[in-house]
Length: 131
Image (tube, rainbow, N blue to C red; front, side, top):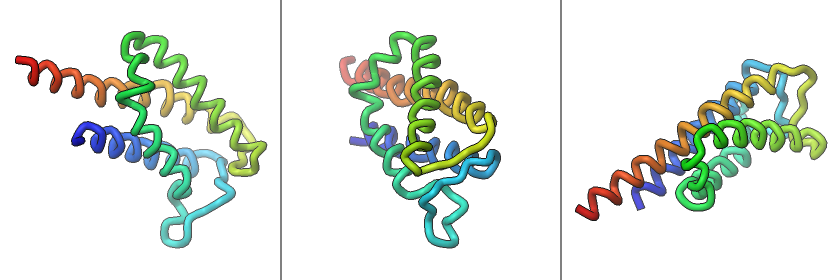
């Protein structure tokens, strides 16, 4: 399905940019790193989580499209909490508040745009097929 591949590619791209920016612009340290020369990018396992997230954009997360403001708030909160939970697991470390601002932006602003981009295109294609 082309729409599923688009969702996966957009999600993986957003994750790669967001997590790499998180590591480069803040004091976040990923405890598992990629081998050189990819060590400046997010860990491979985190990219796989973004790919998995892309698989859910047109199914279990589609309901968020009905409530745009709710999607911004929920995704910002869930994004920050999920990364915060990685700290006690020993997967990441940070020592100040700067990662929170990057996470709030990536999850609170970029994720809803991704969600609406994927599902808006999906809805338009379904409307065209029904004509």
